[in-house]
Image 1 (tube, helix red, strand yellow):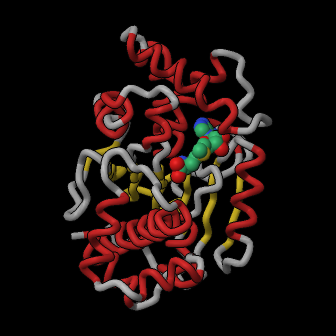
Image 2 (cartoon, helix red, strand yellow):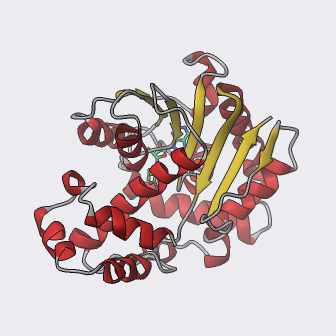
Length: 283
Ligand SMILES: C[S@@+](CC[C@H](N)C(=O)[O-])C[C@H]1O[C@@H](n2cnc3c(N)ncnc32)[C@H](O)[C@@H]1O
């Protein structure tokens, strides 16, 4: 269903500025159902970008579309909304969606530790009218920068794995701030997967993870949302993640968070599969 709606948006040229001319040309020659089919192909498990120039553009704009849909379905204010993202790296679907949804009137804040990826994010969001603030610190320290109950929504776009990898890296003295993220990625995956295989993942990372969620929950207004998603990249399986762990990061987050004492309840949102998406509302 989402893929059909995405195809309709593509037809309306909503994302033309977020795609190369080559991708635009290819998509212009396709029918809506062909576009939907192509998207479903790209988003299959695992995601294996065959022709990155085109499939990378489709992936990116699909998630822009998803986050716009999330903002609409959750009724986030369209006038000057405040949205937080955790562990964005240089991946920009959330700020791009906010730009379109609020017509540039919103504020986007992200906590992101890795310096090089922060530079990439600044470049990608440079031309947006949305106010962009990148806090180069751990999400667990966000209360030092932001007042409580400030945000309508906290977004975790494919971020549970990033948060867990970063916790594990810091336990093993790996510098996630100054290193190239992709140079240290195989080592981080090895450590996390090793915790998982030895049934030690919860013992090792739960406390830090739930503390970060607690902080985000404090920063979101009452009735506001924490929204998580995940997907499976072939590249990360090849780098060493077991499929069983990697495809279940949302289920893991769901189990840990809902069993904690945090004032969050799960909401079912039509069109979003629970395997890949988690919607928590602050009560
Ligand atoms: C690969 S990028 C993330 C991309 C994005 N989540 C996505 O997959 O579309 C990983 C980023 O998460 C950041 N990160 C992970 N845990 C974090 C935390 N607790 N606080 C701030 N940044 C964090 C890292 O510093 C890094 O810049």
